[in-house]
Amino acid sequence: MRKWLFLAGVMGALGVLLSAFGAHALSSRLEPRLFATFETGARYQLFHALAMAIAALAARGPAKPRAQNAALLFFLGTLLFSGSLYGLALTGVRVIGFITPLGGLALIAGWVLLALAALKLEEPA
Image 1 (spheres, one colour):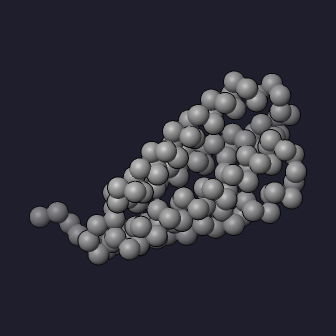
Image 2 (cartoon, rainbow, N blue to C red; image 1 turned 135 degrees about the horizontal axis):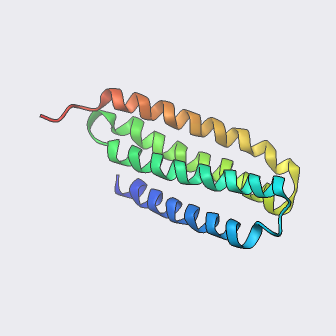
């Protein structure tokens, strides 16, 4: 649990950093379409840092395997989804975009596993 919560914090901090970098350093340098792509990557990174933290906190008892796998999928999905959008926005190389849907699928799978983990959580006494 601690490892995933730590990674969630790092991913969230980087998401804020990248959002600020985009707003202050890229907004006037990128064409609007590419800037919007960069912002989408940062927004999804922040959302899924929170999702990873929730999965880490849910990783206990019978829910632990599903919650840990959800955290892993959120991490990998963010690397692929947001990372490919950052690369696309900064380089303009459109072929990078083929990676984005793979990341999206990993993020969706993470949410499904988090939902399934919730069904295994035990109610507090």
